[in-house]
Amino acid sequence: MTTPAPTDLLLDATGVAKRYGAVAALRAASLQVRRGEVHALLGANGAGKSTLVKILTGAVHPDAGTILVAGQPRDIHSPAAARRSGLVPVYQEPALIPDLDVLDNLRLTGTPVEPVRHWVAELGLGRIDMRTMARDLPLASQRVLDLARALAVEPEVLLLDEMTAALPADLTERVLDVVGRQRETGRSVIFISHRFIEINALCDRATVLRDGETVGVVDMAPGAEQRIVQLMLGAAGAERAAAAAVATDATRRAATVHATDATSRLRVRGLRAGTRLHDVSFELHPGEVLGLVALEGQGQDELFGVLSGSRRADEGELHVDGRPVRFGHPADAIREGLVYVPANRVEALLMQRSVRENIALPFSARLRAWGPIRTRVEASQVSGAIDRLQIDTRAQSEVRRLSGGNQQKVTIARWVAQGVRTMLCFDPTRGIDIRTKREIYALLRELAANGAAVLLYTSELEEVRLACDRAVIIFNGRVVEEMEAAVADEPNLLRAAYGLPPGEALPEEAVATAVEAIP
Image 1 (cartoon, one colour):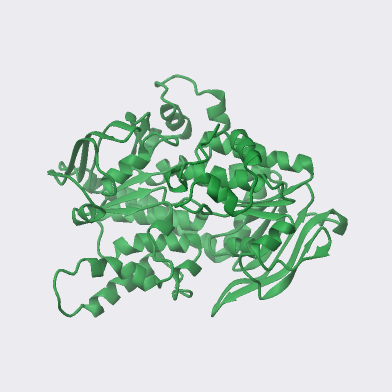
Image 2 (cartoon, one colour):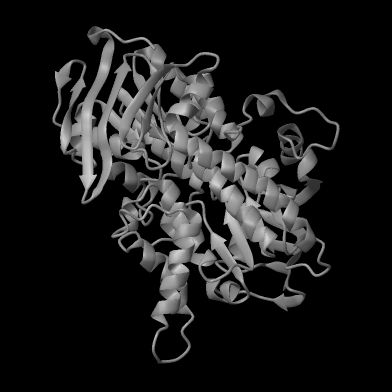
């Protein structure tokens, strides 16, 4: 590890602390970023990364600590003050107002339009209609637009919190290229990601947080990954991650007895919806985790919308446990045992309510008549789900105070508490640390071993072999291939996702932009 000279530092944050009641989000975090450097900020979910970014960009006020920009102390009391200091963020979730069009969103932040158009094109989206409502843009487009808006004001330090987590491989390549070029102009980037392949390719150094404290700074060089993981997890965390990996293997073997059941839990035939989903057919069996793989915009959003009851199919058939069904509302899907876990946990959670209230929500929805609520049974099941998923409830007064990983655990625990028959998971580990990912893999395998059926869409191809029994691949709104998990390695999945037949080589750009999950 090398210590930068004071004259090299563009950003120097020291002893930054923040508490929320009894919960210490940051204890003593420090971060030193050189001019012209891409600097990784790493740590498990709940380590304090997002809190530190929000403090540096004026969204949260620290309880203690000093922040220097170009050697000068700064009082970053608001996002506007951060921007004046040259610190501009792209947060983990889209920062667009859904009910405003793109142009009005830019006006709201005083961002010039033409530079945004330039960066949108540079980032691979081509031209974008500025009168499009933000809510009508795909999540990947919203993320790219957020980044273009940040780049348009030419920040001295660009702070990216899980920028690539919601992006397909082609857009990820463009983003990494643009971010890497910032160092050539003498500007710096703070880069938060759980994907080591990106960190290795892009970053110069990495600062690691654990439990709200800076525990190390690592120069990116061969062998750095192992040191970073050790710092992230600590001894106790490494033991839990190893145990979760063993549990995943054991429950995969146990699940095979259920997967041989002759009756499919979910049968989809000739499904068509909107302009992207054209003809999808597959079966999902009890005791099975079925992976679904697709590049951005191939119809996966529409498919999960139909299966979860949030949109209607134009054509096709759905059968649940051998019976034909038709959903007009998410409640219809839930009544048939199909529950949905989205990638964007904000969609699923009541952010101002407690952990227990969020998990208990389906119990209230099931009430059919007036009468006493079985609070003791409800409390027991909710507590059991919290223990089973190891949810950190120290900040349970408000879910919004939890880390992203713990928030995602709450969305899953909501359904685990009352028993799961069929779970629809749409990129559930997006933006989640290695330990929590493995815990979720193990949970999905455990659910399957107990007879549940899981449909798992993932943008991280390595998850198919880690968590699934087999995979179906969608290209241009159609299922183009099905393969067992044993042969569903990254080259095979990418080949099929690009619509290429077996044996045909991948295009060079596909190989270059392949994004792996942390092993």
